[in-house]
Image (cartoon, rainbow, N blue to C red; front, top):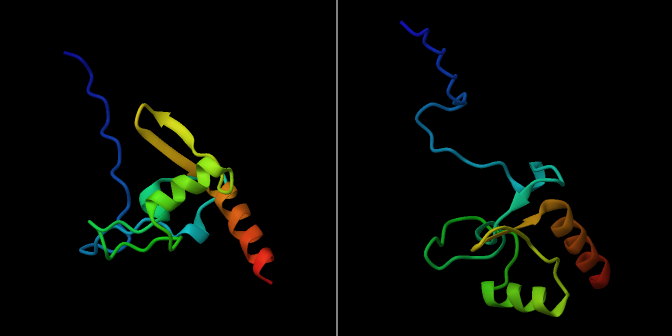
Length: 98
């Protein structure tokens, strides 16, 4: 009879009964990746907090124009941005306004 492998532990639930909340943008390391849904508002999910107050079309116009960091391709239809690149862009925007 083959020996059974031990089960892997499930993730620790800090607040049982509460919905999972991903870490905030400020808590993420610069090497983390964020998707478009975490950056701009989505009409289908109005209550989700986002980082930028521009539309998805405006985000992609900025990418095409070179005024926003280019995303990393994760798959044929999947892209993400490095948190460090987005933070640097936000800092540059703040410097330009002051």
